Amino acid sequence: MNLLRTKVHSLSASSPSESESQLRLLSQHTLLLASLLRAGFSLSQAAQQAQIEIGANKDPSPQGFLSEVWSFVLDTGAAPAAVFDVCAEVFAAAAENARAARVQMAGPQAATRLVMGLPLLALAGGVVAGYNPFGFLFGTALGWIMLGVAGGLMFLAQRWSGRMLHSAQQWSWARGMALEVMAIALSSGQSLSAAHAWANQVAMKFLDSEERTTDLAQCSELAQLSRSTGVAIVGLLRDRAMQVRTATQEQSQMRVEKLAVQLMIPLGVCVLPAFIAVGVLPIVASMISSTALNS
Image 1: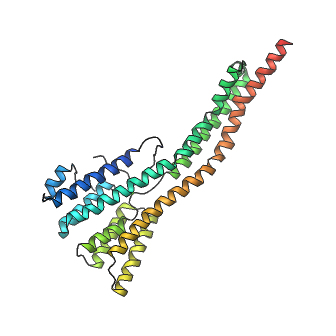
Image 2: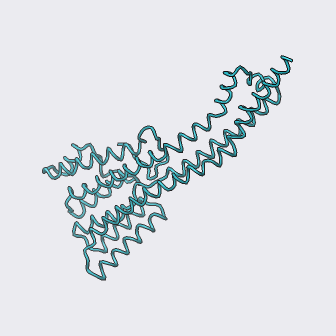
Image 3: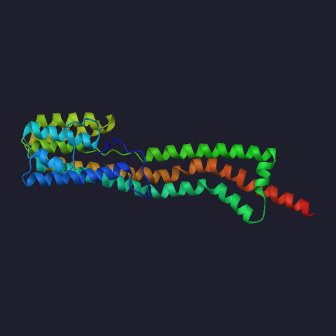
């Protein structure tokens, strides 16, 4: 199974991205692994039947996270089926976040493609109406200048809007993982300090600095609550992890909503002048030329 990047930078509204598909597939395979373990298979047999390669992968990817959990199970003797059930659940949640982000991008992506095609549509409309805008564009020096200016503006608009889309599409599959592994460790009989240390290790490997700070702060907050009150925090950790994933999806949706407005800037600054340069002025020039010849 191919590695997944920690950040997903390319989402298509029409079909699932490779990372989304692999997250969903990894969730299914991990769930099968847990079922086989409950049926009495050994770890190696279950992994082979579930078509999961675990142990060698140390990259900051979902597969690498599964290897991290695998090592924890071997080192601590934790109940593997329950542990991998949790992994399957969080991979499925990450895949759902990717799907939601992809669907939310459909509107801005479609609007961008439509507006970027307006100059060509204007030229086609001029030809259908009986004018000759191409004669002006390719037959005069001013036409060549307009083509160059329009081409530069369209290139700038594509890069500008592409960067905006790129920024809005970023999301992290590993949000909430530090809280999840802390809950896993505590459920497996580990001490609070050992569980917190593993959460810190996972956060350092799979989250960027800002996400790491936020998630570890929540781990520390709940650990302090447990020390001061004696309350069992496994359920609280899992609930908080779910809240973090939900918040991540909501933040992605907010970025897309802002994007729909922000995309108007490059479209207005670049595409509109390009549309006028190659879609309006050549038709006007063709009309004037046609009128002069008829008179």
